[in-house]
Image 1 (tube, rainbow over the protein chains, first blue to last red):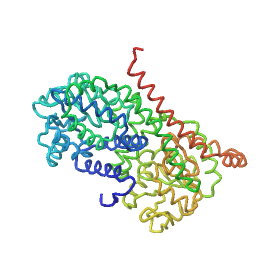
Image 2 (cartoon, each protein chain N blue to C red):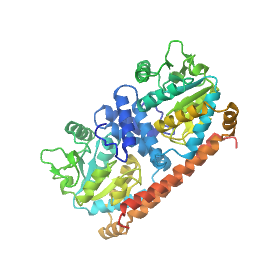
Image 3 (cartoon, rainbow over the protein chains, first blue to last red):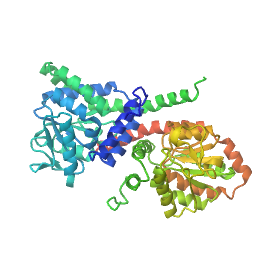
Image 4 (cartoon, helix red, strand yellow):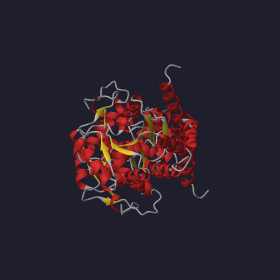
Length: 263
Length: 263
C-alpha cells in the first residue's frame, strides 16, 4: 500500500481494495467477494463515501438490540475478515458479550481456518467456526451454506451479518434469528430482509458501532428498550434509497463542475 | 457454467462474472478488473440490465464515426477480452476496417500475449500489441501506460475503448484521438471525457454496434456525416445519468413489491 499516499482523495477506498486483493491471495476472500466489493463501492460512491444519518439511526438501534440480546453473535466471512479484521477484533474487545463465528457462504474448511487464524493474529480472544465437527444445520438454507456452531449462531438470538448473501440472511431470519445487516446496497435482499439494516461501509460502521456500544453500555435498559422499539427499518431503508438516488445527481453536478472549472 | 441454468433470471450477469473469473485464472484479467466489473454490475442493475435509447443513439453516432474514420482501432484490455472475446472478433470480422490493439493499463508483456492469443483462438485475423518492440509513446500518459502500436492506436484517428481507465482515456484525448468509450458508469471520467459515450454493458453493445455497422455500411456518406454532426454526447450522458437515478426508484418499487406479494 506504500504506493498510495495517505492524502490521496481515494485513499480509503483504494486501501480497502488492496486489503481485499491481499485477502484473496491469502486464501481468505473469494473472487465473488471482489465482485461484491465492486458493487458496494458503486453504492458507497453514490452515497458520498460517508456515514449518513439513517445509518447512525440503524446503528443506535443495533447497539440497543445487541445490549438487550441474550446471546449476540457477529458472523464473519472472508471478505469481512480481509477488509476489517482489526475493526472486528477491536469491537469484540470493547464489547466482549459479542461472540465471533466464522460462517461462510460456501463451506470451505481450510478457508474457514485461515479466516479464524487471521482474526486470532490480530487479537481475537475466541473464534467459533461453523465448520466445527459439532456444527448443526441452519434449517432452511440449502446444501453447503447451512452450518452453524451450536455455541455461536446456533444459540444466538441476535446475529450481525456483514457483506452477506441474501440466501444466508433469509436462512437466519427463517431460523428466527434477529438479523442486523451491514450492507452498502439498500436494495439488496440482505438489506431488505434484515430487521436492522446498516447501510454503510463496513470499516466505518464497525468503528461507529463500537463507540455507540461503549456509550450505551452505561445507559438505562428502559431507554435502550424504548429506542429499540421505536426504530423503523422500513423508514431507514427508504431514506437510504433516497440518498442513493440523490447521490446520482450530486455526483453528476460534481463531475460537470470538474469538467468545466473555468465557469 | 453448467451450474447456472440458462433460464435463471440472472443468467447473463452470472455468466459474465464467470468469464471474468476464468480470465483472472488464465492470466488475462486482473483483480482490479473484477472490482471494476462489480462497480459496472451495480450501474447495470440500476439501468435494468438493458440497452437504453441513449446507448442506441451513441452507437448510431459511433457507427457513423467509425465508417467515416481513416483508421479506426478497437483497444482491448484483459477484462474486455475475458468478457467479450467472441463478440470482439465477430465485430472485426463483420467490419474488417476496424483493427484490434491489445493495450493494457498496466504494461505486462506476458499478459498482453495471452490476451492476443485468446483473441486469435476465437478467430481474430490480426491482433496488434502495444508492447510490440516497435511501439511508440502516448505523449501525455505517465509511465507504463503510455505505449501504443505505430500501426494501431499510433496512427488511429478514432479509438474505441472498453472498460477503460480514465487516465488512459485522457491520454488518448490529449493525443488527439477521437475516443468512443463503452462504460456502464455515465459519471466515470472515461465516460465524461470520451467524444461518444456508450453507456451499456460490453457484450450487449458490441452485438448492437456490429449490426449497426453492417447496416450503415450500405448507407450514404452524407447521411452518416449528418448523423455524426448532429450527435450530442452531453445530452446522451444527461439521459444516462437520469436513467441511473430513475433506476434507483424503479428497483426500489420492484423490491418492495417482491417483499409484499400478497398486496
